[in-house]
Image (spheres, rainbow, N blue to C red):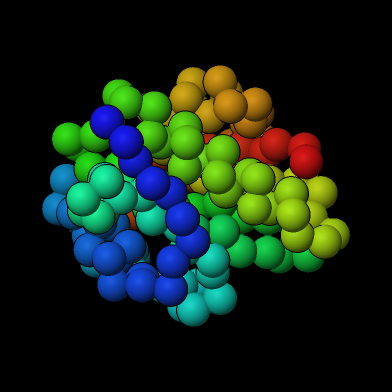
Length: 141
């Protein structure tokens, strides 16, 4: 299976993926999934060789921190390594930006081991986001 990951201005496809994964599957309230950060974020989309969107993520900068968020992969493509590829793409893009020293993300608790395998460490206590327990995780760049 060949998957292409690239930066995109077509956030409509990114939002459609997020609605499927977060709102429909994980029951995150739609008003909590949508925020004003989409307008200031760089979005990435993963597509099959036929151009079908199957995953997405976004990044944005706050001071010297690059925030990775809204990482999701359709259920049909989970377990393929696509999620790791998306996160690595985000990390590489953050490393190219001036002044960013740390990558940060909010991980659903069940995904902490996944992010630890990518080099992230838990920072701080548990909090709820969209009704799902999370922890912040960081990676020095």
